[in-house]
Length: 91
Image 1 (cartoon, helix red, strand yellow):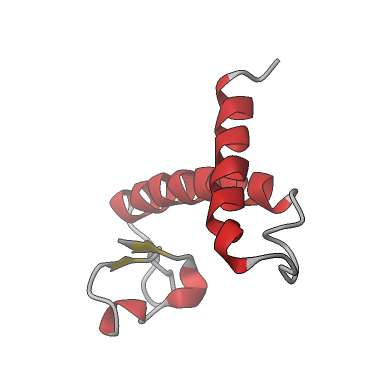
Image 2: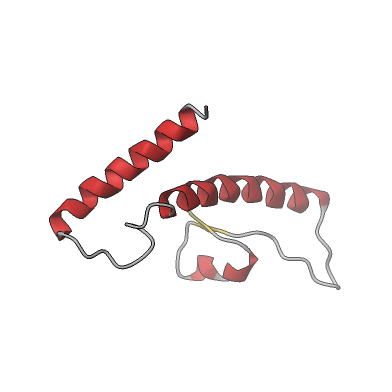
């Protein structure tokens, strides 16, 4: 599933598995169930964005990659392993 925030309203038209937050208007405020669904979705997105932030600390994913292309996947996997290791052992 694709998870997006309120800026991606209508994404489900092109991608059937897209999940976006409920958007309130003046005419129709959010119900308690919709607010709870938005909180759960925000919590899920927050974890994903934190992992992406950790991976962007390494300059390989942030800018233009100027090294050999065939080693890019290996380096991304190593960075992911380091991020997972630091997340598992925070000390």
